[in-house]
Image (tube, rainbow, N blue to C red; front, top):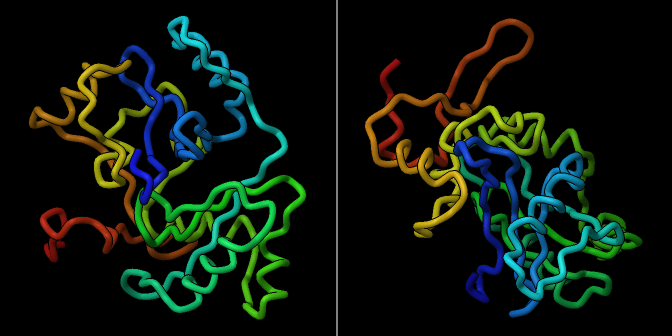
Length: 227
């Protein structure tokens, strides 16, 4: 991972190429990395990573003394652009205590800034005291993701069932150039062969009436005005 963009989106696959968990990795230093994943997979992921340590002198431990926060611009029409408020937030984060790491979300910029803090830190309260007004709540972040057509965690990607490109991993900057990895055969087939795939799409509407929409952040060659 580069120093400037020191976070990376990826998927953990099983030997058959099916998705187990989606991950975001953060580079803290050349010797230390953090893995952000669905908390329900803590026990399995820890054992899984230890299994592939390959006798290296690497310490892999779950951390219960840290929290993950997300700051993003409220979703409006089109793509969320950077604002002066976001720049102020970054300035605050550079000076604040108990901030372990922060980066722009490596998937798409609409998802804002992800912040790793110590457990006792309250980013929302601290920012409000700095003069900025923020709404808070897990539901609002989930709604943002669904408006953007971005799945996350075991609720959206059932472990061991979905294929990598059904999660839009290729559009979310989650496919690298590594040629040898667990589950690579299934991933290679999907990437290089002409095959149909199901994907997460943006849904507009409530109750029974729903309208499938192609997210505006998708590349233009994947979007069409045809109904």
